Length: 528
Image (cartoon, rainbow, N blue to C red; front, side, top):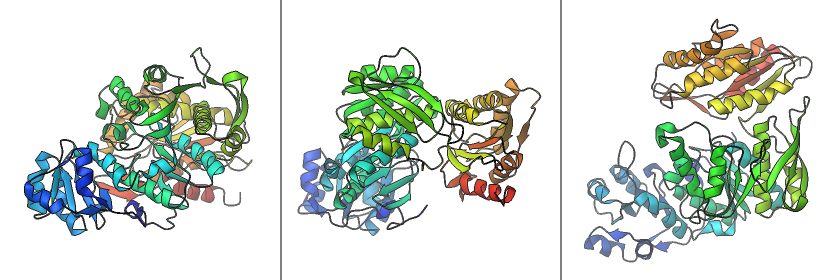
């Protein structure tokens, strides 16, 4: 990924931000000095920024020390102060830790500093999101693709955008790799401030369920929020699908959004649309009787272009012929959601349709490494890492595959173990040739993960016909998939998509499927 002006998320700060009295902000937001001595030290103290990451603090900022899953952030106050933090905001448990690690630094306290970080940052950066058209997409699958579609549309309408999601953080033409799907609230607000400073017109965000629960989107009321779908994932965090939906639903409240757009293709979307506390437009993209203001018809997949044309119907008999640049019903869902969100944000219909048709560049999402051209097969990298997503991905490429469908896949470690045999069963049922490999083993034994995947494969294909297991390195499995691919075949590598690292044994190893596959394609078909 090309880094233009910035080297990391820590650099995404406005050049000019007027300092704000921390004492006044604390009173306004309900934080109190820990002692009278702290109150005296805060008098006249102004801050120009905020951070919840001690390694991401700039001079003149307040460090918000929050309790973490493994350690309290107040343990790192010393590092934050050494890097320029002038005050600490923490909870009662963090006060004594702050005293130990950063003696003499003024301390503010409140019951839940994580919940206060967003509103605090919004105030410090003078509510910059109010100067932008702000959008966010949530759901299990399709967030990144929908966000990129929407970003392309808003760029065509307004000229320059900000994007923050799984793949990258981008303000105008400058970008860095993203540390997570939704960044912490202070990072988000300072990105808004940088965007406003540069005259950027709109922001497109991915909103994970974790982010909603952990208050990363607090302090901003977004103009339009969208929901794609809800499928099995993150149950290690949410416990149940009902808990997972409840987390997503919090985005569709007046505290977070002005209006919403919800895909009602599944029961979870219909529940969300019915319970949303803000005005909602419903979108139906699959055949059915779900009530919706917007619906899709006449979806046709192009064998040569790997794209899908469709018609989006709206209120008052409105019809928009559109083209989704990626194949498959799931991408029509993503495209229709992006279109309706854009219309709700004030984009003219023709501008939206034309921009969508050209929105090919979605990293790791049906990313075409080689086209079928009579010599080469079709080679694709996709992020599908849940059973539902894998099923949709394989269904999407089957209609554009005259020959065999080859899938290279695995499952990740330290996450929902129940999905591993499910992934294997989906692949065995829908693909012709399977290459089972590692994804992100993390702290687990890779063999045990592959065994669980193969258990699912055997439930459908007991003889393991046309199934290979690559135990050495994921790159070897990708190359093997390309080796097996003939001119009429399709090979799709799933599970990691855009990810720039492979996590194994406590290490983050620089790795990405796309360049490995591109090299294998060049070696197999050097003259193509």
